[in-house]
Amino acid sequence: MTPMTIGGERTTWFRETFEAMTQNMEKAVLGKRHVIRLTLTCLVSEGHLLLEDVPGTGKTMLARALAGTLDGSHARIQFTPDLLPSDVTGVTVYDQGKGTFSFHPGPIFHAIVLADEINRASPKTQSALLEVMEEGHVTVDGITHDVPQPFMVIATQNPIEQAGTYRLPEAQLDRFLMKTSVGYPDAEATEEMLLNSGVRDRAALVEPIMKIDLVSEMSRIADQVHVDRSVVTYVRRLAEASREMEHVRLGLSPRGCLALIRVIKTWAVADGREHVVPEDVAELAHPVLGHRLILDGEAQFRGVAVDQVIDELLDRVRVPSLRA
Image (tube, rainbow, N blue to C red; front, side, top):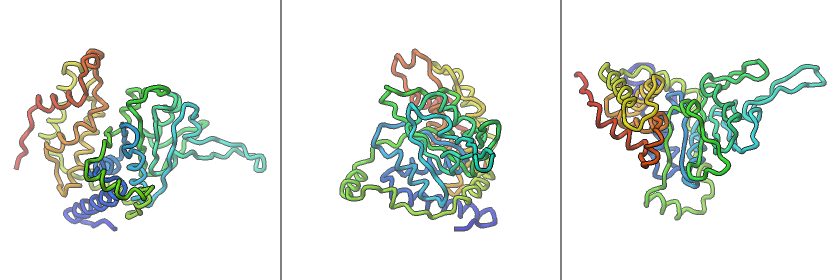
């Protein structure tokens, strides 16, 4: 598939390509179209994704399906308590024959990186991802090495099992553009999966349909989507209101506002539109804000969930009406 060259045709190419990638990933992840679209939106928006869910729901399958859809390099890192930062970034090794030091890149030097059970690694190892997720490069022994572009980290964690885990700090959570969960499949998808139980690895059914370099072209198209001033004001008011809400200790930051604008632009053009609408903000508020709004201790004691707070926030701030 090759991109078109003019506005309307480029938008059509984007929508059709986005839809083709979605359908291709659905071969591996059954009944999770919305989650797949969120994952692709995160990719095109040049961000990273955190998947938090119970075991066995297909978090790893989703990441592998994305990597299989794109004709590019990918790697999986199994995070464990004994994993070292150098196991992620790479090491500098002395070559006795040449008398020189050479850098051996780690698994982070791939386009799509699956960080499986990230909360099982020590904080020191978790912090090894901070620089590369934010800056797009790693520094080893004082030398900076760039990672391939496009570059995306898909991290998974299990929120149920806490033994032997290390909670991700707020600084690391903010590096993820979106956070979502796969969830259990519906009845139809469950029965289809059980009827085809002979297929051990559904991710193997996914074949590359697009060169990974074209993701950068899709990102450039998404950047050109029009955002009306009223939508910008709406996002600003949501951020201000979030900082004043009961039970919220840390509201939406300017970085979070920028993240929301980025994803709604991609979401709009994936829907075939060259402009965003306020409904895009409401639809993507939970995956973008869910890990950025930090609740106080009283909220946790009362059992107040962050999704409830976001719903209340959306009800509190008036939705703008776009000009014709």
